[in-house]
Amino acid sequence: MKLKALVLNCTLKKSSEVSNTGALIGEVVKIFDKNEVQTEIITIADYKIGHGITEKAVNEEDEWPSIFEKVKEADIVIIGSPIWLGEQSSITTQIIERLYGGSSLTNDKGQYIYYNKVGGVVVTGNEDGAKNVSRSVIYALSHIGFTIPPNVDT
Image (cartoon, rainbow, N blue to C red; front, side, top):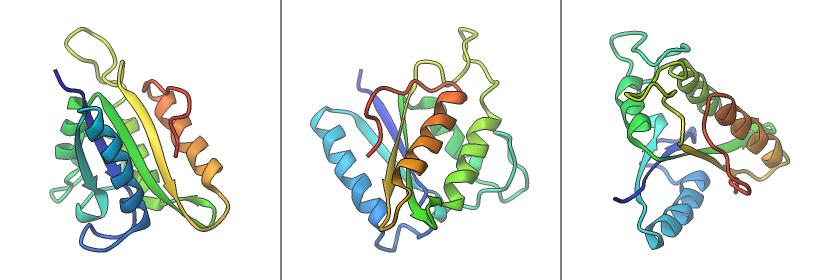
């Protein structure tokens, strides 16, 4: 059975635009491909994601529930974020909030749904803040139940 990786690209640009975050994610996908990991990239800016700390739709246009289903199916979840003013993108913050909203759910074995899922982060930017953003995202993923192996940031 192949491992499934889901990469949530939290660039502020749509997938039709060139982004540094997308380019670095492409390098990560090459490594996954070499290791026969099935990978899907979702560029969050292409979707209408409502604000809130819940896995459920917060309005009729909210597309988060369909993305959340893919998170539940993945073995590996990577968040890609650019740096803006030394911080993670606003989309990254929004996605962490939405992931947090589902953290109390359990699977059919009674385990929290992020149990035994690996989390990681890809950070791009031309300014200071990469370690800060990596630390923030990795802590958030760990806090809600993802397993964080060593050196999982790039």
